[in-house]
Each structure stands twice: as structure tokens, then as C-alpha cells.
Image 1 (tube, one colour):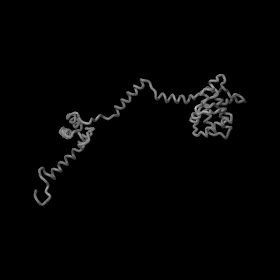
Image 2 (cartoon, one colour):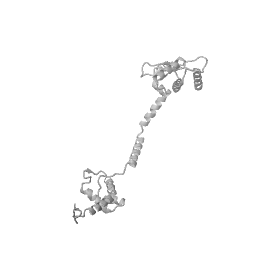
Image 3 (cartoon, rainbow, N blue to C red):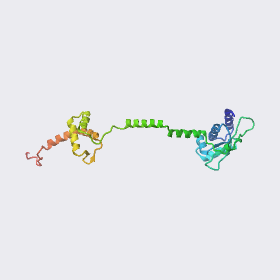
Image 4 (tube, rainbow, N blue to C red):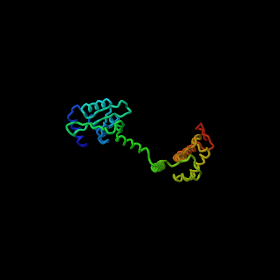
Length: 245
């Protein structure tokens, strides 16, 4: 059968039927492509959901109306399946071969007629989905290596809860352009309280605590200066300001 002649003859018939809408054309095209996938052998076996998806028809009511219209006007011979789990049987009319319309049926293989044949189009879609899920061991190893490399790139530098030694703290303070004496103050302070934040919560990231310490160095220095001015060591401020200290 000539593909182009069949298609053009069908489209010419559509033009002569003013009652037909876009859904009639899209459904016929879905059937025609399915028919082509099976080398134009009648009948084809198709499921409603597959045809609706391919024809871009969302309503079951619209689908049944359109398929019956195609049947009534001689485009197809529709034999719906009584069971939703079984495909419907559809014969497509061959046009353009003469004055008489012919319905070619596969008669030399009765088993083929009773076989539910799913669309190659949908088989290809399912194979594509499955191929993305399954991969060879080589691909799995490659994927694992890529994931490991990505985790190294995106994972932040480890910041342990407590430093290993005073020298480690001094090196970090030196990187922050801070003197060693300040590193010793930080180390001695938290070493004395068991490396706890606020004296209660165990420290999780000592470098973060050290950065906060460095940010507050000037604040602590000003506070000590203010305390030394307002309250000299060893003396209490007088409540009567007229009495000399």
C-alpha cells in the first residue's frame, strides 16, 4: 500500500466532512501511525489510554464520540474490547486503490488476530525510561566516582569540635593575622571550661568559635578599659560623690 496516497485520500475525505473537528484528525493520525508501525496490517490492537495520549484527547466522552464518528463515516471499523485489560480491535480502511474501499484483514494467522499488540511507539517510550534506570557495572562505577568527586567539591572543609593542640590554634590565629598570645588566651579559656560554649553546650566547631573570638577582641578590650576607669582594682565606688575616695 502506498503511504502517501493513503494519507492524502484520508485527508481529502476529512475536508469533505464539515462536521469533523480537530479531534477527529488527531485520533485518526494516532491510529494511522499505529497502523504504519504494524506495516499496514489489519487489524491493529490498541488501548484507549494510549490513543488518547497520542491524539491529545483528555476526555473519554470525546474519545468515544470521535471513534464512533470515524466508524460511521467509514474511516475505521471499531470493535471495542469488553475488558479494560484487553486491547480494542480496529480495522483501518484502505483508500486510493480504486473506486471501492477495501478492508484488508490478516486471515492467514488466527493467532495473530487474538494477540494484543502494544504500540511500538509506547514500547520505545518504556524502553527509554527503563534504560535510564538500568546501567552497566562500568557506568555504575563511573557514576559512583562522579558522586564522590562532587561530594568532595561541595562538602565544606572539616571543622572539628576541639583542636588537637595549642600549636594548631596558634597556626589558625596566625592565618587570621592574630598574635600567638591571643591564641593562647582562646585555648586556655576553653580548655579550662571543657570546651563548652556558654559553659553548657559542647563545642562543635572550634574554628567558628575562634573567628567569633577574634571579632570580639576589640569589644573585650574596650570593656576592660571601661571597667578599669569606673572601678579601680581593690576599691569600691562610693555611693556619696561628695566624699573623696
